[in-house]
Amino acid sequence: LERRRVFDAVCFPRAQVSHRASPPGFDGMDILMWKQPTVTGGVLAAANALFLAVVFMDLPLTPFLCKVSILVIFVGLVLKFAHLTDALQMPQEMVPKESVEKVVRLAAAGLNLAASRTASTVMWKSNGRTLKALVGLEVVRRLSLFVSVPFMVFLALNSVFVVPYALETKWDLIQQHLQPVKDKATTLFSMVPKYTDIKDVKFD
Image 1 (tube, rainbow, N blue to C red):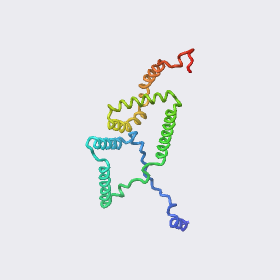
Image 2: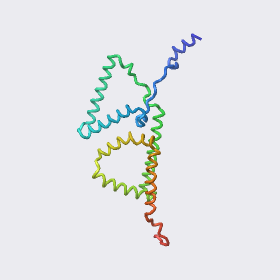
Image 3: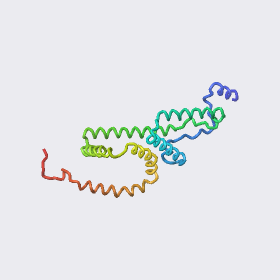
Image 4: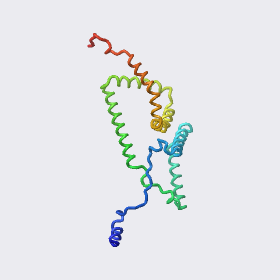
């Protein structure tokens, strides 16, 4: 039996299963859900600082990122000579496959839904939806003259870190505040006259 173990270890080294616990995978959704507030706060602060530097200080983004990458590489070289790379070894699986598959499924579902809605809107399959799209586009076109694009990007960037967490933790409270608004909107839309309300009139 001992000879068989030695033979398997020599001939099939990859078949040997390591009993060491593998490092836990890193789930990108943990950042958006503020599972680790320090990490999420650091990422958000760095993203805002980079955005503000690019917009208000005219920082050239590509040369800046190249310089930062070169600096990180040289820092890694210093750590290598200091024999600290083993202590700072990163896990082989930074993002679990399950998280990647989930994100891809959600992205594919979102793209398919957006494509189908866009096609139905453009082809006038739903007159109400197409008219709403026309009105919305006209409103956005007029408001775009008064709203700064960098401000919208800044707002969207911070919303990525706020909206998922708020929907996950404060959904009941949000729903309580939105329900009266939804009811009022439904009431107002029901008061708008429609051509179907006119009876005994034939439309050619």
